[in-house]
Amino acid sequence: MGRAFLDQVPRHHDVAALTHADLDVGDHHAVMRAVIPLRPEAILNLAAMTDVDGCETWPAEAYRANAAGPWNLALAARRIDAMLLHVSTDYVFDGRKNAPYDELDRPDPLGAYGRSKLGGEERLRAVLPEHFVVRTSYVFGAGDDYVSKAVDRLANLQAAGAIADCVGSPTYVRHLAARLVPLVLTGRFGTYHLAGANPASRHELLWRIKAMAGLPGELREQRVDDLGLEAARPRNSSLVSLFLAETGIPPMPPLEDAVKELIDARNG
Image (tube, rainbow, N blue to C red):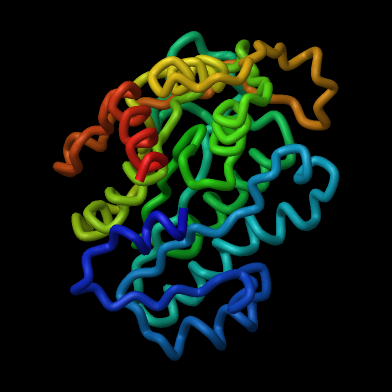
């Protein structure tokens, strides 16, 4: 996410990019020492512990990164009168709704990952009115995400599996990254769902990529209950926005366009 953002952010913006090696957002004093002297107008928090099963196994680390991290950044932002944009997740919902979740639906996470991300949302809202919470879903195309790795296997005549009975809103990372600065510049603070336009499972997403790119590997359909995963997954965590259109931010392209752009980028 951070790499995609830096690749697209307009060059007239002065950006200080801090990696995890530069700053552990879960360390309050380190955040204050690093962020306050920079005196940014806006802080974008793209850091997270996103290993859903790892969060279940190591919840303390999950809450440090996903809840304490945005809380610390919000406290720093309040000190210097900065705005804060924080990227959150569709996994704050339990997946029992039979339609995409909008910003007014009540969160009810199933596991430590969703709970820790919801904790980050709640902490920053309590501290800083000048915030954007951006919930997204099934981000792909960064190179080190599950879908990208599965595409690599399919391209190399290897088999890949993907869950077919959990649905989200697959979001091409470059489409998401390109909309963050425009959203900040609106100054219309609040919570927004910013995710792909078409609900789909990861299996359907990979099937589309395989078919469009002509990848030779075998794609296997998986069922979440058969995998013995540490953490529960919401069966439907697709997202829709009630408010994004009011900001003037362009809507997300259709999934077919996202798949085509991913293939074009892989082909150079």
